[in-house]
Amino acid sequence: MTAYAPAEASERTGLSLDTLRYYERLGLFGPVQRNSSGQRVYTDHDVAWVGLLVCLRRAGLGITDLQRFMGRLRDRSNGNADVVELLESNRDRLRAEIAKMTVALDVLDDKIAHYRNN
Amino acid sequence: MTAYAPAEASERTGLSLDTLRYYERLGLFGPVQRNSSGQRVYTDHDVAWVGLLVCLRRAGLGITDLQRFMGRLRDRSNGNADVVELLESNRDRLRAEIAKMTVALDVLDDKIAHYRNN
DNA sequence: GCTTGACCTGGAGTGCGCTCCGGGTCGGAG
DNA sequence: CTCCGACCCGGAGCGCACTCCAGGTCAAGC
Image (cartoon, rainbow over all chains, first blue to last red; front, side):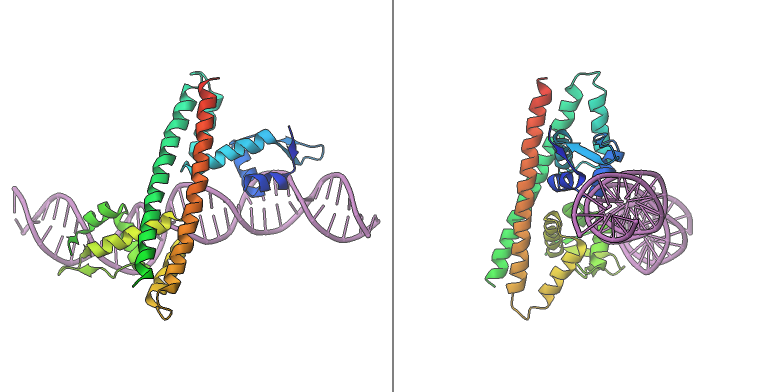
């Protein structure tokens, strides 16, 4: 359980200090522990979790989607089925998104070839 | 040179009527031809061009980047070198983005496996 | 000739996701 | 003791990319 100062957590997650606090305020993770003088101390669990959040954002989820996701994790009356389902549907969305971007990449390649020799 | 009514252009590009007009206003394409009563008539050239714009947006360019891109296309004092360079750098950016999303996909897969059997 | 529906305009409004701000606390260096 | 830099807070502000709106025109169908 390594501990990270805010600045290091920011560096490791790629999010700004403000954004980390913002996510925490919204309940997307944490609450983060504090040291004696009230400053946050992020654990590597926190950092890893934020990493997942970043992935989900990249998959196209909005902030409120993430909140819903956290809600499902907290209310496990159905076991993990709901969580798994939600993750899977977003994996599919991410796959679709990657596919679209790959098409865009091909288009760019075409355009580059076009402008290069005309 | 097939012609498309606004609704069809919208459907083909995946952009709303408002967004099509918005892009045109900003000079990202067009100006689009009009019929006798002032309504827009999109050509397939327009539609294809908007398709490229969508690809560039997907590659992470903002609207002002697209305007810059159009500027370079109009001012060809350097031949196409500038345009090609710009397209290439954005292709690289798109590649990097796809790579990140692929990592996110792997993370999601891991998480799914994790929640499925615990 | 009336209605309907698609489209027109310029400008205002919206939602999202941060990002910044002012004022404050704390611990360590000089 | 003073300064500095990192961090704290709640709340305001911002930039982007649309999106909506009011009020209007037009063509076609009944």
